[in-house]
Amino acid sequence: MITNFITLFFICVFFLFTLSVICQDSDIETDCTNRWIHIRRLPPQFNLDLLSNCSEYPLFDNFCPYLANHGFGKKTHNKSHSWYRTDPFMLELIFHRRMLEYPCLTSDPSHANAIYVPYYGGLDSLKFLYGPEVNSSYQHGLDLYEYLVHGDLPDVWSRHYGHDHFMVMARPAWDFNQPFDSDPMYFGTSFLELPELFNVTALTLESRAFPWQEQAIPYPTSFHPPNLAFFESWVNRVRRSRRKTLMLFAGGGGSSSKPNIRRSIRLECENVTSTSANGTGYEKLCELVDCSSGICQHDPIKFMKPMLQASFCLQPPGDTPARRSTFDGIIAGCIPVFFEDLSAKKQYGWHLPEEKYEEFSVSIRKEDVVSKGLNIIDVLKSIPRGQVRRMREKVIEMMPRVMYRKHGSSLGLRTKKDAFDISIEGTLERIRSRLLEVAAQ
Ligand SMILES: *[C@@H]1O[C@H](CO)[C@@H](O)[C@H](O)[C@H]1NC(C)=O
Ligand SMILES: *[C@@H]1O[C@H](CO)[C@@H](O)[C@H](O)[C@H]1NC(C)=O
Ligand SMILES: *[C@@H]1O[C@H](CO)[C@@H](O)[C@H](O)[C@H]1NC(C)=O
Ligand SMILES: *[C@@H]1O[C@H](CO)[C@@H](O)[C@H](O)[C@H]1NC(C)=O
Ligand SMILES: *[C@@H]1O[C@H](CO)[C@@H](O)[C@H](O)[C@H]1NC(C)=O
Ligand SMILES: *[C@@H]1O[C@H](CO)[C@@H](O)[C@H](O)[C@H]1NC(C)=O
Image 1: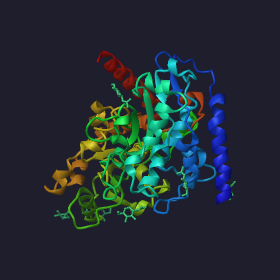
Image 2: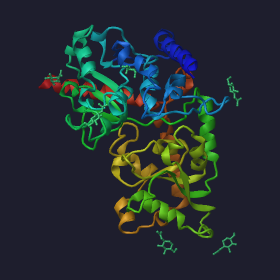
Image 3: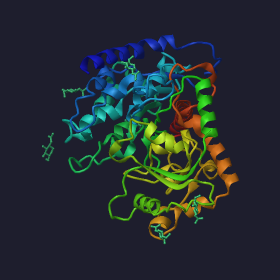
Image 4: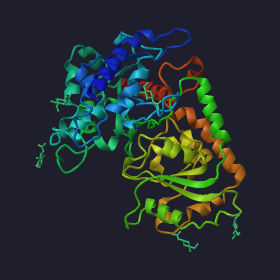
């Protein structure tokens, strides 16, 4: 294991630092006006060193296996081209790798419209969340700030006081917004509470309810196609797939007696009789895929197959309002059913435009289900077949927007904007308007 990992680690380092040159091919005509990005050089303690500690956190999974393939993890099987055992917390690596092939990189920070900070903030937080620094989580981010402001090139920061800087922190923002003196009572660090870093845009997996310095971007799924042919063959499979289940919930929770939406879903699903699907055109009205205790996390086959066969995928809130499963479901062409706006609508505005929700998703208030006894199956059964088909087409249309395609992918696939491309567009736009605001003050 250790030797495996060391090899992997060096391959990783090698690629990160050499491909930045190799990957800048000139075969796509790119207009870089207002899109220049400079990658801030950081000492390895802020990124690569953190990978070498992947097995050092006794209270956290050994995440060494998930580092493979620049953060995609291992392939699901040897012959797979598009499917990996991806851990969503590895988005910092995935994003960094894609950044290196961004067509409008500049080595001159004063020429850049935005500054990317290749800091693996979620991985760095592990020592505060699960490691030796558990009682000093107010310190998370201070050494980074110190480096950005007083490190090798202080002018890069002082030009706009960090307003043009952005980074990816691959955990929900809730993990980074604890009050300074809350150790060891609460889980989380205070990174996003540090006034020193308020000006920096953080791309997180989930954002807080009110606008802050962070923006939510999609959880990575396990699907990372390398070219247009593999992408299109998947889309065809999704289109052709027979949907024999009305609704599916893949997840855990809801087994306690406390009323909540997951419990209501479980009870409703377990209550379905074998003949109740008669005359509906479905074989089953409801399917539960047990993903409790993270057993599905690195095994996409467990939930992707059933999702391909279901019309609707239920996406109830759990510990946090949003779920990776929402994006897995979209990749499977399974229409998402949301139970509160914070689960997606109020978070992923860049990738899933707010005004489109009625076209590609169903919204049912969780209060109506939990306390008023509204039956989810009845709501979904009443949606006409034609409308279900139209919604599924919309879901399929959204698919590229929430997938992270493979780095170095072919030109054809690069014409489809993926989750990374949309994140960069959104970030550049946000920084542009921020700089205008600051200049006007
Ligand atoms: C890695 O782990 C070792 C031992 O637990 C610790 O001393 C070191 O500070 C850690 N390095 C980083 C970058 O977290
Ligand atoms: C997959 O490939 C690896 C390395 O090439 C090999 O060790 C392993 O046996 C292969 N597994 C299968 C199921 O073919
Ligand atoms: C953190 O603080 C708690 C309570 O004060 C203490 O029991 C625990 O040993 C401390 N942990 C570390 C790693 O210092
Ligand atoms: C953040 O930006 C404001 C101006 O908008 C500036 O006054 C402040 O000093 C900046 N913060 C840091 C830590 O640089
Ligand atoms: C279970 O089914 C019965 C009969 O179909 C129905 O009256 C009852 O409300 C159902 N319970 C739940 C929790 O859906
Ligand atoms: C439902 O379908 C099954 C098999 O197709 C049949 O045996 C059963 O009688 C039907 N039940 C009702 C209530 O129509």
